[in-house]
Structure formats: C-alpha cells, structure tokens
Length: 207
Image 1 (spheres, one colour):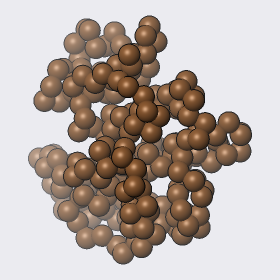
Image 2 (cartoon, helix red, strand yellow):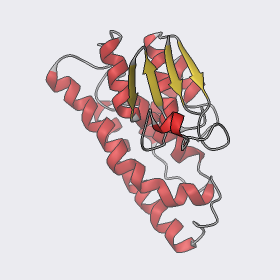
Image 3 (cartoon, helix red, strand yellow):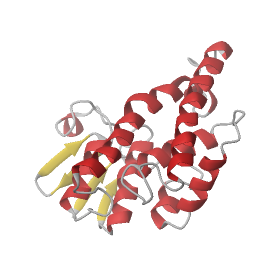
Image 4 (tube, one colour):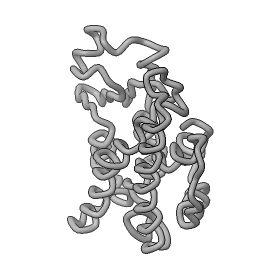
C-alpha cells in the first residue's frame, strides 16, 4: 500500500492526501515533521536528503517534492480526468501547479509566518504589510483567471492544478488580515465544496 510520510497539518502533505482522495487511492500515513517524528534523522534523510515532508513510498519507489508526487500519482493511477494526456491541456495544469510553487508560495511567507505561525522572527509590521500586499496581488491573478474560466483554475473542469491552488486560497482566507472582495475566488471555493477531498484536506479549518 502507498505510504505517505508527513504531518497532516502541512499544506504540501495535504496536496498528496487530497490527490489520493480524488483517485480513490488507499494509503497509510505517518506523522513526520515539527511536533512529530524528526525529519533530520538518518532514517528520514535516506528517503529525502532535504529533510522535508512529504515523502511517499510506493512499493520500492520513493519520491519527494509534493508537486512531483501528485503528478506521479495521477500518472500512475489512471488520473487522466485530473491530469490530461493531451500535451496542451496538461501544460495548462502544469503552469498553475508550477506557478503556485514558484510565485504564489513565495508571496505569503512573511505574512503567514507572522500572523498564523506567530514566529517571533517575523513581527516587523512593515514587512508584514509588504508581504500581504504581494500575496493579495498574486491572489488577484487567481481572481482574474477564475473570472476568465468561470469554473476552475485551468479551465472548465476540475484538474490536478486545483489542488495546490485551492490549498493556497484556503491559506489566504484563513490568515487573519483584511481580504479584498474576490467574488470569483469565493464562488470557486463554494464550487469545490462538493468534493470530499476538498472538505477533508482543504477547507477544514487548517491553513
């Protein structure tokens, strides 16, 4: 059975858990990371030299990096409805998956660590304001894309790209700062509420 190593409070672990829910894929999950089993012990570093979660073990196959994992699972376990075989449609998914990791993730770091994690090292009010403004600017990109598609982030149908994007939207909504009135984003989250994986691993009160 597929093994998932990583604590369920991690946004990147929840990408993998939600993907498994969409695929109807059974798994065993072990809590690793801050507050649980340490990831900088030799046992874990042998699996991921970065000492970060998630890691999966699928039989003898080991993989880390959350976006690589969800792509692998969709490809390995007949997830064509999530991750299309057509190169153009797949590329649309990939651009949003990669954008979430390379751009959107970076925008929230300071504000999230300050307001949610309460990190003592991230309490400069000016830096919080700058980070929040940058995060909101990136959320405006999501808003415009959802206005364009009228449905989901990569087009009219739910896709693998919606998993990291929706988790990021949830994090934005759960951070206690003033939020712009992004109506397409609000409608998007309501649209996703019919999905069991969304309810269990995204809109569950965990940022």
